[in-house]
Length: 517
Image (cartoon, rainbow, N blue to C red; front, side, top):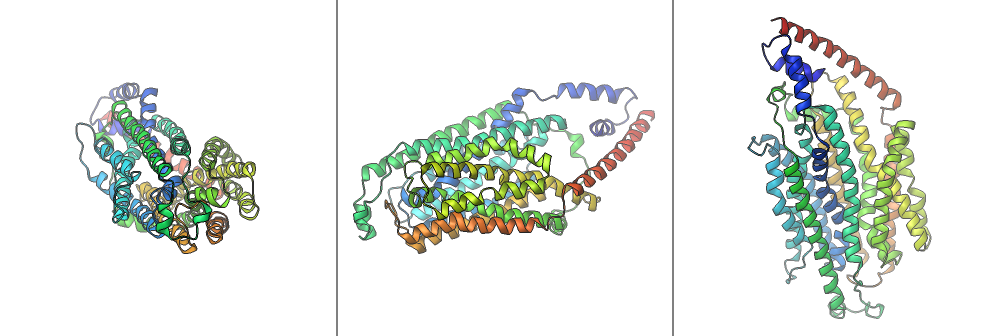
């Protein structure tokens, strides 16, 4: 009814029968095909595949393959994540200011950024022949890739509003997209882990541990190290090929639609006024603060779990398979958590879902676990990971509904709610990853060694077990302050429905008046 009202009001002074016939024909004409939905969904894979590969493997790659000191690696990881956080609102601003072209308004960003993104991604996994400027090399291409992939993903996310004028088509396409993105995380972990895992890991025998770093590096199995570096480049090449293929399918299979009628809607208040309103909304601050701590917990796990498996638990030849089990478990349990939150409520799902990993982390940190127990811990971690990353996107719309009811004269701030949640989590991710890698440096991390000093193993236990558990408990305590429970959510939903029904009645009167004119 709302779409019909908008279309009728934009068609001007038409006859009484014209708006209905146009709407009916327009719905049929612009119905989004299954093929277009699949092509659109495939466009979400590159961001997830590259993000998962970098999240799990970049730290261990810089330390053990590039042979970089932990302090230098922390600079790269910290700066890259912070820069990634900053580029989201910047790119969003420039995209919003871009003009329409023959390819659309958003598609040129996707098309033009792709070749440069894949080149910079590949060079992240390339070890240059010099050592003096390695930090500058990886910092440059890591930040460059984060910028370019943001130039791809921000317009791609906004493309949902321009692939169809029907809300049902948009919702359906988003469902396809979520499915592909979840599979993309599994694919990124599988490609990177399985290709790299085929190579025998190079390390320094224990008898060399007391020698100087130069002596250690000189005594390594250079052939094995070279093979490992080549494996990382092969994995990067495969992921780059998939990135390009997905971009081609997206650009050829999806046509951006411009609806001049809908673009003439009322303009909201300025960005800074909107940001002030959003940041003063209590439920939003409490929600993102709680999720900030729980996200930090799982980001610490993501960034350090590979090192923990490799050195502390001594599963050197199995760590890539264990990481893959985590992502498969997370993928398979997403439908379960969707059912759980609808059956028992979202706050209950937060408490059960996020805390479910705590007992297993305690076991992994306190006991000397074998391989079977480690896989069980991985499955449990995947169960909790699915809840931790599904629930924020499920609960943010409830906060927006509450905001709309309390600020009915300030529409159009949905993007601020989502973008600043992403900004805060990425910023926190950079801080946590930088500090955790720097902690390994202080603990005496030995690059390329088969075994690490006990101080490093203790530090890894703190980073993977103790710190995440503390963050989870702080986050869950903050969720106690979150005011929107199931009863409040249903009240807000009912109130919004009454407002929408009133708007529909008002729009119907406007259509009838326009038809009479």
